Length: 325
Image (cartoon, rainbow, N blue to C red; front, top):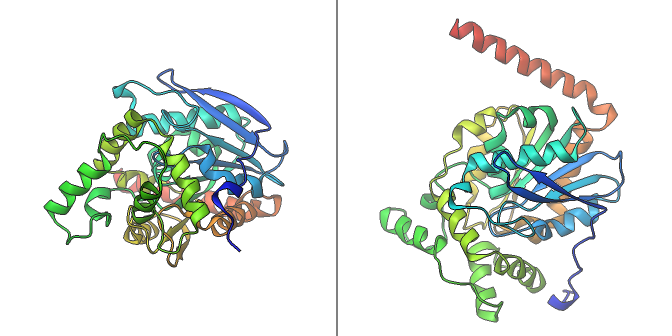
């Protein structure tokens, strides 16, 4: 039986709230859920979303994990920034700041990023803070480049015309206004699978419509020019990829490309009929992938596997140095 939109559970209440300060002084809202001392999971949401987007994962994981979720700059409870504060470098700075304040020095966590959150992980992959704290990663419904050119939001053949129209739609300055039946239909078409439940469409609509227009427009421009191919190559840690086969915003070709290009891809999960909002559309599947990464790379009996991975990475670095000598 489907739940009505009104019956959708409220987002979990945080155990603690923190404020991370990024490299440029921007302040970020951070929430910590679950028991202290439990394996840590860090969640980075996507464009136009907020920590509420991860509500299902937080409710499930926080029973036996310490779950850290934060609002990207300009989203949710994190204040907006100046125009110059919108860049992939800023996203990487923000993630480093969150990891530094929420984790102990040297403490490892599984990092999961949806859409722009996954791009945040790619952007930060060569940062010291990422190397210090990331044990494994999940890239969820995301891509590293050619986001506008590959988008299927506009039902036309690929080419300059489709790219131009898609860019204008995604970067539109038109206000979203209140959530209405029409706006929910538009949102479902662009970002969710054809069989998405009405309550989950309504949940996504409430989150997306709450994003301030200047934030939505500013990040749309950044994503339109995105090129994080180098960041993908720097993600030298166990990384899983999950995406919906009906995703129009970041079509499945992106997930397949990431799985092929990642130095240590540990699995590609394709969710049949699911769209772009997979943590809300298929929460159990996304949560299960996070749990698998924790079991394999964070729990005490996973230490030998992590040691082997670190040794392999050290050998790769040595080989590169010898090639360049």
